[in-house]
Image (cartoon, rainbow, N blue to C red; front, side, top):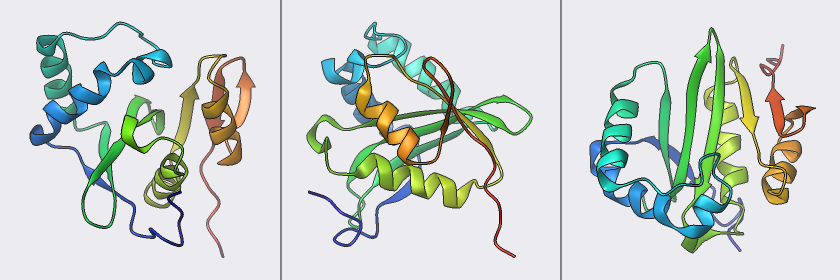
Length: 155
C-alpha cells in the first residue's frame, strides 16, 4: 500500500499535451467510466479536442498526479465554475487503485489552493469517493454534492 510515509513525494504537475494519450487510456478504462458523471467513453477525436481545450483554458487547473520518480498515477482537475469556485474531478490510474493516492493528491490541492471553494459531484453508488471527500473535510450539502470552503490560515 502506498502511504505518505513511504511516498512523501506524491505531487501534482501541470498536465501537458504530452499527456493526452495517457489520459485517454485511463479515460477509456471501464472502472474510470463506472463513476464518471458522463459514463460514455469518448472517441479519440472527442478526447483530443476536449483535452486541448482544457489545457488552453487559463481559468482551470489540470494536474497529473505523480510519484517521487515522476511516474504518472492519475489526474486531478479543478474546473472553474465562477469567482473562486471550482469543481474537483479526480481519478486514479487503474494500476494504482486503493493505495491512498487520491487522499495525497487532495492534500496537495489543499496546500496549493487553500483559498478556493471546491465542489465535488459524486454519484450515489460511488461510496469510496464519498468517503474520501468527507475524510478530506468536504461537507455534504445535498445528495451527491460536497463542498470544501476556503481553508483558514494559521495566525
